[in-house]
Structures are given as C-alpha cells and as structure tokens.
Amino acid sequence: MTQQLSSRPAEAAPPQDAQDPVARRIALRLGVRVIELVGFLVLLVTVLFFLARVQGDPAVILAGPEATPEDVAQIRVIYGLDSPLIIQYLNFLRQFLLFDFGNSITERVPALDLAAGRLTTTLLLCVIATVINVAVATPIGIYIGAGAGAAAGRRRPLRKVVSGIVLAAQGIQYYMIALLLITVFAIKLQVLPAIGFDRADSWILPSISLAWLAAPRLARVVQSAARQVWSSELVHTATAYGLSPATIRNKYVLPNVLVPLIATAGTQFTLLLSGAVIVEQLFGINGLGQLLVVSVQNADFPSLAAGVTLIGLVVFAVTAVSDVLYRIADPRLRRNG
Image (cartoon, rainbow, N blue to C red; front, side):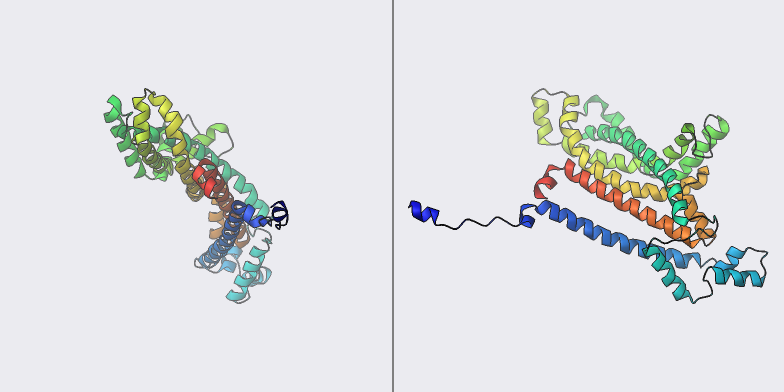
C-alpha cells in the first residue's frame, strides 16, 4: 500500500487566477469602469463642443463685439476655426484623448493647469459639504429610524416631527437656502461673508448650502436602514436581555447603517460636484464650476475640455474608493468577492 500511495502523481497546484478570484474580479471591475469613464468623457465633451456653438460663431465671440471682419478672419485662422466643423471636432477630440488641451483662449495659460488650480477649490468645497452632510444626516437618520423599533419610547411623537422636517427639507432647493443664508447672515446680520472662499469663515455659507443638496436624502437612507435594524428580531432579543439602547445602537445599528451610508455618500459626491457650479456662481467662488460656465460663454474649448476631463477623473476615483470601502464595510461582499 505504501508503494501505491507513493506512486500517485502529485496534484497540480491551482492556477494563480483560481487562487485569487477576488483580485481578478476587482481588476475586471476597474477595467470596465475605465472604459465607461472614457466613453462618458468623450460623450460629454462632444455634447459640450456642439452646445457651445449653439450660442453663435466662436470666432465672433472671441474677437469681441467691436472686431472688424479682418479680425474675425484672423481669429479663425489662429484657432483653426476656418476648417470644416467635423475637422474641428476631430482635432478637438484628438487633443482631448492625448491630454493636450493647449492654452486657455481667455486666460492665455495652459488650460490643464488652469483647470487643476480651480479644481482644488471645488474639491475643498465638496469635501467640507460631504463632512457636513454625513455629520448631520447620520445621527438624524438613526434617531428617526429608532421610532419604529424597540427604542421608540416616549419620544415617538418627536421623532415623527423630525421626520416631517426632513421630508419637507427635501422639497427646498439648495440654491434657495443659499440665497436665504446670504440674506440673513451676510446682509442682515453681517456676521459672515457672502463672496469668496479664501478665509475659514467664508467656507460656512457655501458649504452649508451645498450640503443641503444631499443631507435630507442621506438622512432618509440612514433612517430606512436603521429602522430595519431597530425592528429586527436581533434587537428585540438584545433588549430582552437588558442591553441599553445606546449599546444596541453602537453594536448593531451603526455597523448595518454604515454600508448604505458609504454607498449613498459616494454617489452624492458626484451630485455635489454638479451642485457646486451654482453655489460657486452665487458666492463668487473661483472654482472649476465657475470656470466651466465662463468657458462655455466664451467658447474657450481648451479650458472646457480640461475641466470636464478632471471632473470625470474625480468621479471615477470617488466611485472606486466608495466601492472599496463598501466592500470593507460589508462582510458578505468580502466573502463573495
């Protein structure tokens, strides 16, 4: 028998791909998202390229209202606007794919450097708004969600009132809140500045206004997740064993709320980037959103392409990080890869 056992061929080791399916799936997912990112950016730049020409001839816009026909013709030659529209688009698309955006037409500086400098301000605004969003919406959502479970207690009417306020807040647009904050704190009380983003106190009003765009929705998501946990058999059993509501909240509710919280907050960051365009206009912030608006108005296609590209890269990075954090927070996804 010993000879028979020793004569068996050694089993072949499983291939590396079979040993690490999680890494293979993550790599595949990232590859798909890179393709989606490129396709999205090409589509968006295409729409913006033709949309910017709806408002008029770019050469006439660049030359100015007092330009002579000779000046307009010279502008056409300098910026390649004398070529057929399809040739202009293909050249524009080629430069976009090569990250060769050239100089900004209005600012006369490299468009990518100009957009990157403005992006820093916009990202700071969105990050502060995200912190406010999570810090406000999470405890409110958990508090409201407890109204349907074992922790409802005598505060059930108050929880209903808070839930109604959150629901009403969803119907109030963030730009209306921005105008209200400017009127009260900058004009009436004169305690906070309404213009700029260069001092610590100048961050308050625009950040709160932008956070309003996402906080009510996030509070409702957290409320729904918390309500399911508070109403579960696990919480009822823990309550029967004498665990306090605070212990139940920290041990059972928060870990289960974390998963939808991460997923929703990551998605909302993209929403905040779009909302920052209006907030920057209202508060006079020199961010990327304002640059995109000015670029469309002035037919500054290099700055427009650079700004859109950077936004796409930020959205891709935020989505990828959110996906990783989502899988870390959810043990079921870690086990299933």
